[in-house]
Image 1 (cartoon, rainbow, N blue to C red):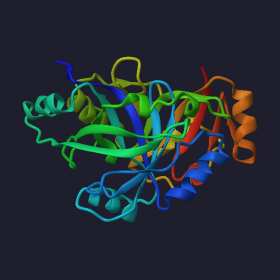
Image 2 (image 1 turned 180 degrees about the vertical axis):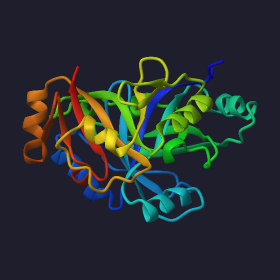
Image 3 (image 1 turned 180 degrees about the horizontal axis):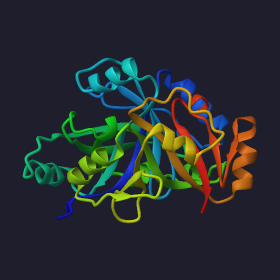
Image 4 (image 1 turned 90 degrees about the horizontal axis):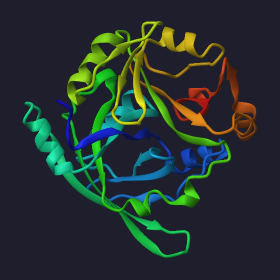
Amino acid sequence: MALNNVIGIDHAVIMVQELDKAAENYRRLGFAVSPRGTHSAHMGTGNYTIMFDPDYMELLGVLVATEHNAPARAFLDKRGEGIERIAFTAVDSAAGAEEIRARGLTPIGPTDFERPVRLPDGTVSAAKFRTFMWPTAEAPGGVRIFACQHKTRETVWIPELMKHANAAKRIKQTLIATPDPAPEAAHLGRLIDREPKTEADGAVTVPSGGDRADFVYLTLDQLARRYPGVPLAGLSERGGAGLVLVSADLAATEKALGSVAVRSGPAICVPPAKANGTLLAFIAS
C-alpha cells in the first residue's frame, strides 16, 4: 500500500564545501540561483536553491556544526561534494512520520524550521518547512531520504527564479551509483512502496510517485556506457552520482554551458568535476 502522505521527488540535496563558491559555479552553468538562505539555528546550515517545476535542486552547506547536521558533515568528510540526500514532497510530515513508524521504522522528526527569503519586490518573508527523515541507516545506495512539507510554497517557487539560461525545466532521473543495483533498488522500493523495474542495460529504476522523477540505480560502468565520453572522475562507487534534467531547448543549454558542455549521444552533460561532484545530463523534453 502506497504511503498516503508522501508523494514523488521534491528536491535533490547537493552537499558542498564552500556554499557561496558553489552557487557562483552553478550560475556560470546557466542556472538562476536563489539568494542565500540561512536555516534555523538548530539546523546549522545554509542553502541556495535552483527552482524547477515541480521540483528543484538545493546546494547545501554547513555553517555551524550541530547535532542535526552531523550526518551531512560525515558525508563531506568521507565522500566530498555531491548528492547527499533526496527529498520527497510530504503532504503532512507528522502523518507521514507515523505512517513509516507503523511499518516498523523510527522516523527522525518531524522537524520544523525556516529561512528568511528576500522576495523580488525587495520585501523579506520566510520559507517554512516541516520535515521527517527515514532512519539514517535506511539509505539505499548510500543516499539518505526524507520528506519535506512546504508550508509556504509561494516563498520557494518564485517565478523569477524558475527561468534558467540553460533551459532546465525539471528533474527526470536521480542517478545513484552502486556495485549491486538490484538489492539497493529493492530496498528503496520497500521504503516507499514502489516497484523496481530492471532496464535493458541492467540498471534498476524505481518510480518516486506521481509525475515526479525516477530513481535509477546503476554501476559506474553502466553509467559510463549511458554517457560515453563524459569524465566521471570523483564519483564514488556507491552514492549519488547525477541528475538527468529536462531541457526546453538543448541549443540554449549548450550555449549556456559553454566550454564545460560534453555532448554524449542525445544528452548534453556537465562532468561531476565541474558541478560540485554531480553529473548533470540535459535531455530534450
